[in-house]
Length: 248
Length: 261
Image (cartoon, rainbow over all chains, first blue to last red; front, side, top):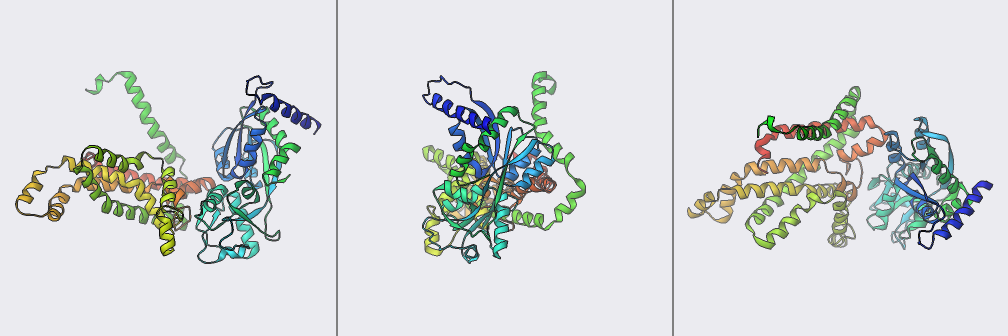
């Protein structure tokens, strides 16, 4: 932990040193490739921006199930961050993980509605109202699986207009005004700024466990390890918290 | 040029080019879990996607015939800048990334779109996420293939037949129905088949504008995409179907029909 804190301190000073844009940077940013769940994009982009003097990150954001399929087909990356434990386990069982996965953060579900909530949606049960255009993530996507669980807990049966291949697709349909409501993560609503969130009570909600692990296939395993240490350190966790996640 | 006169390096490059087409197909056939192809084919999810694909692509082709043949007529009869503009507009969907087409369709026919908002306010009609949206997306992407084929046919047409018909007293509509249309049959046929094949394979505009829901908008290409991430053997089985259909189309059309392009 002490080492990590020191690293972070170094990172902060490095960032300031690189701020001038004169190119007189103390450290060369370490290249690292990160496969991350689509819902992590705002947090990880903010992280990469803050530590741009330390890491030169190439992100591949997609639904966790898409990333899992890509990794199984031999895609090369240094770090994998998933929106659930199930897909992390799949990748681990395939022998693609180096070391053990860590809990990265937690997330909860919320109902995304248009700003001002014109359709008066206040509970999951409201989503079953006829004539309402509700969009969910496909059950093969972690967000879709969680949404299905939450709806089951609430005893609600919804007839969705579309099953999106990543949670950001749900968010964008609501933000565009093409869907009346969708079930997304709290973090999506915190960072979107274009939709309003309707809280789901804890009794019906589902806690999403985000996992992060180092991959065997990576070209920069050590950089990947650094990246992981940084996001798990208190400052990295604060960035995630600011983006609406609950720290690990 | 006889075959023997093609320089060896060109032959080698041609061979590489051929391999690029051949290897993915070989992969599909070799890696296909043949024992599971049968069950995957009759699985309700597959049948639903196949029937929906068939319905959407045939309807889109019908719409393309209805709108595309007149459009080709206009294209073939206009000249100058107007023709250049019309032609660019008509062929744009052929080069536009389909996802961009999907986004554009939202902005036109979505609830907040240029036309869609009027439909929604006046009649409460919403197009996105419906089977109609899937058909609209397929028509948008596939109709240019028909228009181009028919326009090509019109240009190659011997217009003396139409002139003769007119000289014999036939009016515009009659000339079109009795003379022009029958003469255009090969071009219309090949254009319609290509249009249908393109509609059948449509993915980007459909998943963007129509969303993904089994039985409503989840056509075979969408089902392949979803299945690849959850049950790859199902995706391979579905891909084989599309491969067989595509091969059948090409075999059925042969050079004679494609030559009309």
